Image 1 (cartoon, rainbow, N blue to C red):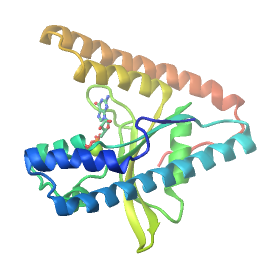
Image 2 (image 1 turned 90 degrees about the horizontal axis):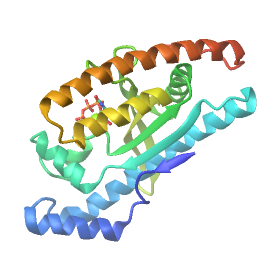
Image 3 (image 1 turned 180 degrees about the vertical axis):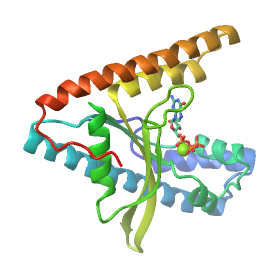
Image 4 (image 1 turned 180 degrees about the horizontal axis):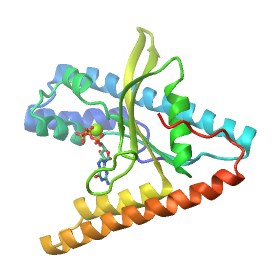
Length: 238
Ligand code: GTP
Ligand code: MG
């Protein structure tokens, strides 16, 4: 199952949004608007290519081993507001070239797997496909962040074939288990959506860190049971 966190790219909405930026903030100049829209379509194509590859792998596991490694996927394109906001935060130029050179998460897919072994088998099978490249790996499962965040982040470059030829385009894929996703959603809400007093915030952050450790223990135990009843090949953690 794939959840689209936004509708398909709507070029007239995008053009209208870019024009408001152009007038009020002197951001993308008019000449760049068509180029930006073209580039967003390339990002969308790259996102669909990777999610199709993941669906094919999931279907193969279902057919061969009667096991679905992927519980569900979510995909999204970064909004114009977030793209400009991120460039500004990083003090980078506001141009299509700057987006292409500096932002690797305009196209994003979150792959929520059933078990930790699934995270590594699905990501390894995808990474070994000959038509895509792995640009960057951050393994926050092996080395969780200080706040307890766990996920495997991989940036892929996938060729999108246009009339002008192949355009290698980055897609950020976050692989995680259901438990990691459950935890990350609450931590995200605590960080971005709450206006709690500092003392409460730090108390909850500490509790969340404890929860991350408990969830990790539960996952290890459940993974152990699942390994005993599962016939699929075991993942190599690279
Ligand atoms: P930025 O993209 O600029 O944030 O830097 P980066 O690409 O080095 O970031 P990284 O790969 O570490 O993380 C990118 C994404 O992972 C974020 O946009 C979030 O979706 C997710 N993420 C990273 N750290 C956390 C965290 O501590 N909590 C939660 N809930 N999500 C996180
Ligand atoms: Mg990022």
